[in-house]
Image 1 (cartoon, rainbow, N blue to C red):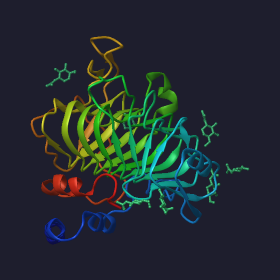
Image 2 (cartoon, rainbow, N blue to C red):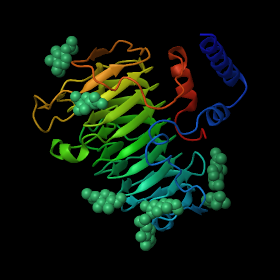
Image 3 (cartoon, helix red, strand yellow):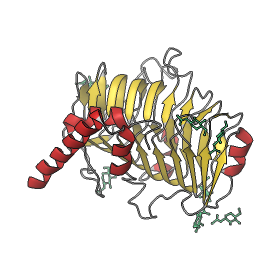
Image 4 (cartoon, rainbow, N blue to C red):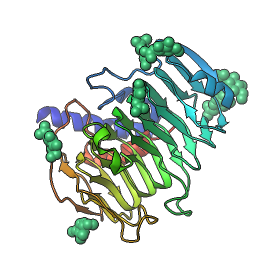
Length: 339
Ligand SMILES: *[C@@H]1O[C@H](CO)[C@@H](O)[C@H](O)[C@H]1NC(C)=O
Ligand SMILES: *[C@@H]1O[C@H](CO)[C@@H](O)[C@H](O)[C@H]1NC(C)=O
Ligand SMILES: *[C@@H]1O[C@H](CO)[C@@H](O)[C@H](O)[C@H]1NC(C)=O
Ligand SMILES: *[C@@H]1O[C@H](CO)[C@@H](O)[C@H](O)[C@H]1NC(C)=O
Ligand SMILES: *[C@@H]1O[C@H](CO)[C@@H](O)[C@H](O)[C@H]1NC(C)=O
Ligand SMILES: *[C@@H]1O[C@H](CO)[C@@H](O)[C@H](O)[C@H]1NC(C)=O
Ligand SMILES: *[C@@H]1O[C@H](CO)[C@@H](O)[C@H](O)[C@H]1NC(C)=O
């Protein structure tokens, strides 16, 4: 108990000092490294290109060439790069924005059939015909301190996902990202027909992400395990956290502000606001499971849990931000230019 009080006091102090004098990046960089499933897993911690050469790229061909192969390499992105084809990142790579001006647009990024990739400090916006980032059949991936943006005026199906994770991918952490102005954010498991391949994978930690003016999937998971803690949702309009098709989620310490219809659901119904093209009544799948850990602040949103599951505590250590500080800490720390 003493430790708990001292801990809160020190975070309160840090936030107070931070707000007045110290820039946010010090607070965040010193306080948070990698945590969650990308760090603690049976395959080993995600290290990306650590130990390899560092190279700086400033155009599409340079970037495409730099991320090929499986050699360890740290690739720093300098400025705006407009991709004309998807960037396919090899194993053992870190792709990191040099500062808050690193920006990828045009096409998005595939992390496919590889292991050990870090994507950090990149703004990725207005990607058409596919996701901003797709993680497919890959393990040990850390997606951290990025910004994702498009618009919601074009409806749910004009853009695809922001970070979609499919085909039995595993041991992933999605942290401190700023997801905004987009409909379908983060889908885990993209089709019922891959149940046998996907089931029991998708161990993903989502923490300290900032979602603002989004439609659905924050995240939506099938078949796996996701730990969703300390995220901030502002005007996440229709349905934020969705656990379906026997998926297990542990949901704790999240904060909802503004207008959100449903913060959390385990019903198998894929709401029409999510996939209106399939049927105006939505699609029906099996229900998922959700367990609530530390208290959440649902704001004015509803929650609808049909069944609790067996993912009731995370199998690793992690720093839970006190609920009262979540909004402040995330507004200061999420997105690009903070590491
Ligand atoms: C990644 O790098 C490690 C260490 O150099 C190496 O053992 C491993 O084979 C590489 N991964 C792949 C998929 O090549
Ligand atoms: C790493 O890539 C090289 C060629 O780029 C290949 O020969 C080797 O088999 C790969 N190693 C692994 C473990 O995939
Ligand atoms: C990034 O590109 C700018 C030119 O656009 C150049 O002045 C600068 O030196 C580059 N930075 C690095 C680290 O290469
Ligand atoms: C970001 O880096 C570029 C290239 O080195 C430089 O021109 C620019 O001034 C930097 N911007 C900031 C905000 O540091
Ligand atoms: C998944 O990726 C591995 C390499 O990590 C590859 O050997 C395997 O064929 C891939 N599986 C599928 C279904 O693409
Ligand atoms: C829970 O969700 C189901 C399926 O969408 C719906 O039929 C039910 O009315 C909801 N219950 C509450 C209390 O929102
Ligand atoms: C947890 O529940 C799921 C769904 O019912 C089940 O498939 C899995 O075997 C259970 N795991 C454990 C460790 O009990």
